[in-house]
Length: 446
Image 1 (cartoon, rainbow, N blue to C red):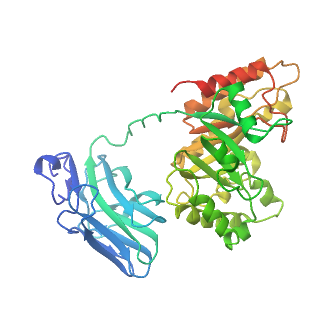
Image 2: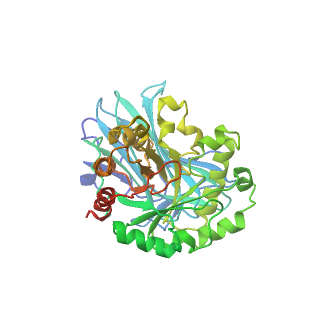
C-alpha cells in the first residue's frame, strides 16, 4: 500500500496488489506469519475454522488468563501526518465468556518508539459467533502503528479465533450512520393488575387501551419466577428485573435457580434482564456496598453467558438523577464494566412536577443518553413518566408525553417503558389525552 498517501502498510498474505491500493487484509490463509504470541503461556496457532477464506489464527493460553497476539512488523510501518486509518479484526470464542480487545498504538518512528496515542475496541464475547472490533484514528505525524489482539479471562481449554484483520486508509473517521432497527425505539409500559384481574387479563387490558406494545416492563421483587412466569406470559420483548442480596449472589447461593432461569429463557424475543435496578439508595443506606453490587453483576454475567442465548441482554438500570452533578454521585460506581453489561438502562422522570411544571424532555433524557453513547453501549429508559400537574386535565401532560417520545426516539433509545404506577407518585395514565399520546408512540410505524 505504499501508494496510499505516502503511508507504508505491511502487505498481508492473500491480498492482491489491486486490493492493497485501498485496503490491507490478513486472512491467515498462509498461517500466522506476521504475528507473534505474547504473554506467559500464550500460544498462537492456525485453524481451518475461518470466518472467510481457508484459515484463521487461534489464540490461547496454556495456563488460562490473558493471551496476546501482536503484529511483527507493525501493521502500518509509516503513516502520513493527518492521514486517517481504520483497523478492524473479527474474533470468535470457542466457548462464551471471554473479553477480546483490538489495541492499536501510534508510536514515534526511530529509536524511542514513544507511544503518542492508544486506541482500543473491546467486546465481551457471550456466544460463539464472529464479532467485529474496529479502531479508528488520525495519525499525529510520521509515525508507525502497532496492533494487537488481546484475550482476557481465558479459561483452560478456551481459545479465541481471529480472522480478517484489515487496515484501511482514507476518509474513515466519519462513521456511517447505523441502519435503523426494524422496530426503531420500542415503546411500552409497566403493568399493574386491577381489582379482580389476573396477570394475563391485566396485559390484555393494557393492549386494548394503548395498543399492543412490542415491549413491556416486568418487576420481580425477589428472585425471578421460573419461565414463563410474568416475564414470559407477556409473550413479547421484555425489560425484567429481579433482586437478591449481592453477597449471597456472589457466593453462589442462588446459582441453581438462576442458572436454570437463564438456560430456560425464550430465544424468540429480546430479554433485557437487570439485577437490582436503582441500587443507589440501597447502597447509600448501607444495605450493601457498591463493590459488592459490582461483584454480583460479574457473577450473574458468567451464569447468563453459560446459557448461550444471544437474546439475553444484561441491562444495568440506574436513576438518571445519578448522572446529574447535583446528585454528588458517580454512575460508574455501580457499573461493573462494558464487558459485563450489554445495555445501559435509565429511570428518568419529570422531577420538575414538584415545582409545578413539565420539564423540557431534552433536559431529562439527553445526559444519560450521552453517557451511554460515550461508553459505546445501547441504552433505554426502563422507567419514565410524570405526574399530572394541578389544574391540568391531562392535555398538558399528553403534550409532554408526545415531546418526550419524540426526544427519546431522536436520541436513539432501544426501548422506553412508561412507568404506569402509583409507586413514588401517581404516574398512572388515567386520562384519555395521556393514553392517546402514549398509544401514538407505541403504535407508530418504523
